[in-house]
Image 1 (cartoon, one colour):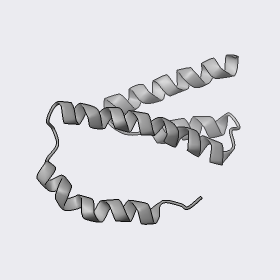
Image 2: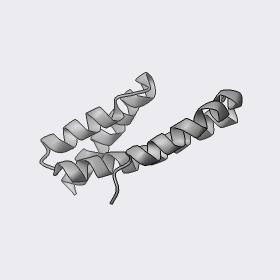
Image 3: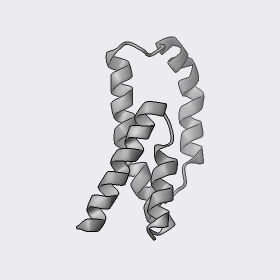
Image 4: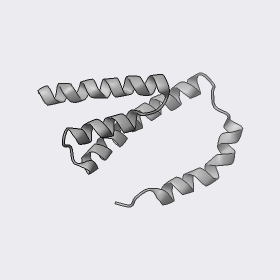
Length: 91
């Protein structure tokens, strides 16, 4: 239980830094998890799973505030989507 509370506090602080700076959540969280002895694959999976939700929230907020340049989005999407799929590791 103590370990869970410690991880929750670190996650909260890392997210606070990420919210203030717009970056560094993955770097902080990964470093702390690795220093606590979490295996690298588990640390990476945990950080990326958490980033799915924070990225979705960020995208939703930008969409709500009409802060998306859709013309630019549609110009970049045909290149970005296949590139992301090709560079993702296969399971």
